[in-house]
Structure formats: C-alpha cells, structure tokens
Length: 417
Image (tube, rainbow, N blue to C red; front, side):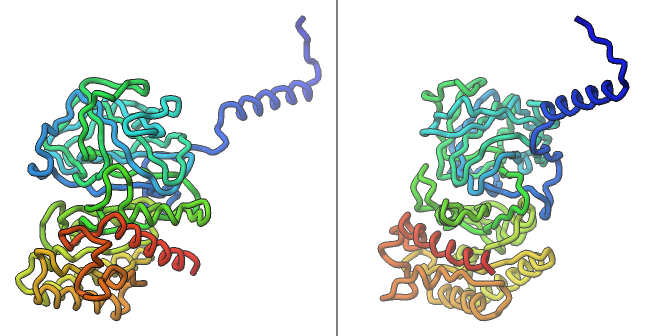
C-alpha cells in the first residue's frame, strides 16, 4: 500500500533518518587514512622494518629472479594495530619490478597461514603495482587485526622481477617460493626454502600517538647467532618485553641491522653514515634511535685510534640530525671481541676509545652499555663464554636474550620520563 506524505516536516524527518542509516552502514567507524602520509610526525608507526641491500653472490647463490613466482615471507611485528600498510622497495635494482598481487595473513606454522584472515593489499586502489628501477611504493591503508609480536605472512605474486633484486640477506627467517600464482588456500608444502627477504621494506600501523625505535646496526643487530625462524635476535627480545601484556607500551621496534655493515666504508649494504637518513630517519613514527655500529670499522682498520676518531665524528652528525627533528638518540657501546679475527691491541684501543666517548661525552641522550653487560668478568676484553659463538665476536641466542632484556629495561625507563 502506498502512503502519501502531506506533512513537509514528516517528509524531511524520514529523509534525514534514511540518510543517517545509509551513512552509518556505508562509513567505517574509523576513517581510513589517505595514502602517502608517511612523515615522521603523523599517525603512522613502523611495526617492522628491514634494511635494503643488493645480493652478495656467496650468500645468495641461487636464482634470485622471482619472475612468475609466488613468494611467502614471514615477519615478526612489534606493535599491533587495526589498520596497516606495507612498504615495497625496488630502490637498489636496475630493472622494473611488476607485481600481480600482495596479500597478508596471520602466519601459523612455517608456510601455513590462516586463509580466513587473508587480505589483499591495494596500491592506488589496484592490486597490481609496478615499481620502476630505483623506486619504492607504499600500499593503501588496509584493515587488518594485527596483534603485538605476532608472525605475519606477506605473500607476493610476481609477474616480472629483476635478476638482481632489492633484498635483505640476513632474514634468519625462511621464505617459501613457488612457481606461478598463489592464493590464500594454496599449499606451499613443495616450495623452495630460502632464508632471505625480497622487496619488503617496512610495515606500518595507524594509531594516534604511536612511536617507534629504529636501530642502526650490523650483524649483531641483524641476528647472526640467533636461531632460524625463532625470532630471537636482541631487538625481537626487546620488543617481546616492550609489547608484552604486562608493559603494553605499543612501541614499534625496527631492526635496521645489516650483516658486515660499517659506518664509514662499504661492507655489505650502504655505509651507516650514508643510510642513516633513509633507514633510520625515514621510518614511520620514529621517536627513538639506537646507534650500535662500529665494530666492523675497527675490525678492518689499519689504525684503531684514527678510525675511532672518525666514528665519533659520524656519531656526532647522527646526533645532530636526530636532535634537529627532536628525536632522542642513544649510543650503544661496542661489545668485546678478544679471540676474534678482528682482535689486535690496536683495534682494542680504538674500541675502548669509542666506548669511553659514548659513555662520557654527553652527546647521546643515553647509553646502552652492551660492553659492560656482555664482557667476561675474568677478561673484560672478551665476551662471556656462555653468551657467545665460537667466533668470539657474535653473541649466541642466550646472549641476545640478555641484550634484549637489558635494552628493554633501559627503554622502559626512558619511556617513563
């Protein structure tokens, strides 16, 4: 039956009610943020990151071209959130990267995921994305229930990929590679296993008042000596404490370590002095910085004290850049290395010179004294035997546990100030 409405007020009331109902159904409770707002002081916060580098053949001896491949990569996040975006990088490659689709999902065991949780990411509202040589891209914001310290699977379906890709070699985490295209229900049991990350640079969460700590480091931060797929590098342990149910700080922990990286000269990856702006200051929501790098510079030095003075000058520049952005920056002392191939009396003099400056200069906003924590009480120039690898340079998993908890206690004190 049709009812005529003669009362203009009744007509307007019903129109308004219908509009409110439509708006309630059509608009999410929290408006998705616009793409391209990843500045240091907005509401995006990094929850995971990896420093990008070019492959070294001796460490990546297989076919590294991912054309017509599906690559499932596992990352451990730090802070949680309900809206995410992914950074992809082709910055260090000379060829175009073409991606058919990217989907994320809660990781379960090894390559398995929860397919019901899978969400396809979009780039300017399209699943396909093309990255020219030397470029990077950020996905559109996507709703996803990301839990603190969880394992997330990022699966990329490649259409065309460079022969020399942009990667992170020291993932200490297995990636799973299949020929062809995959979806959330695809079985990766027969996939090729490779402990590398391809093209994934960072994951952000959207939250008001978010904050992250970015760590500049070498293989000790990258986790050499930790257990594959156990996610027990010292920054992982630190995040486990900071984002535990007890502390619940919601601080993103961003590990920008690279194995065999140096501050002054080129080892693997760009020198720390050159990558500081991109890898550290360029992270979303960074409020705190930890500089824990220099042992490789001293280890290859022909004059330990001269190298120490050069390192100190670079640290000063990093501090000035951080303070110009009103960020807090902390210096971590260089750990002992007696018994390692790097050790000489000259190198030890350089290490001690750097550490003394970090402790006493007042340049840094605080000191994380890994040297004192990790030194053998019977010989302060060496790592504790129970906390190190046989190379006498890198901590083992137990040593990383100690470092992570120590760093977390330090940062908790800083957060309470």
